[in-house]
Image (cartoon, rainbow, N blue to C red; front, side, top):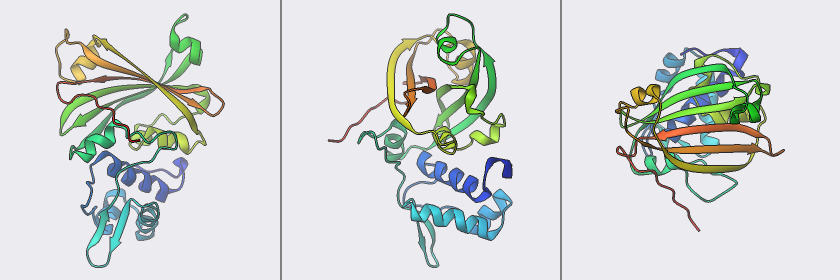
Length: 237
């Protein structure tokens, strides 16, 4: 795997990748993650790098080290300071589904005048697209749009973990989110990516993420293949 010191401490990059695998269900609850030796080989790093990454995740309550028995996943939920509501990915992982991400593209795009993206981000912005698979079936097509003042990397490998973790590393803190939903016919690229016919309407979720200065930091559009699984929101009180 391609890690670079330009992206920050190597052990933190390894930690965030392992954490993302835990949160997405690739490393399932109550199961052991790969051994230190296997992780050293996968990431081409030293023993101390893996040990530091694992110890951080143990300290955060995601993993548990057991003498002679390996390292087990004991928590696969990320707690939001904004709400007790569980996000959709957490609900799917709780039900035993496996979620995998495919990183399609990261680029800087030019926005047309009189469009929403132009009004929010100006002439150009970042565009990150990726596909989520649910138990190996293409399920969600995500398009993320972010302002160019963030100075994001243009290498795909930088987006293998959580996008919000990447933004957090740039000291971005989110104060509020707004979700809107619609039914829409996706374009040809999305239809092909989700293996659906061109005349199939899909659930579309639009998310607006604002920082503590009430700036729109991330706008995303997500198309859900609800025939694979319905979209669910669950709140605890």
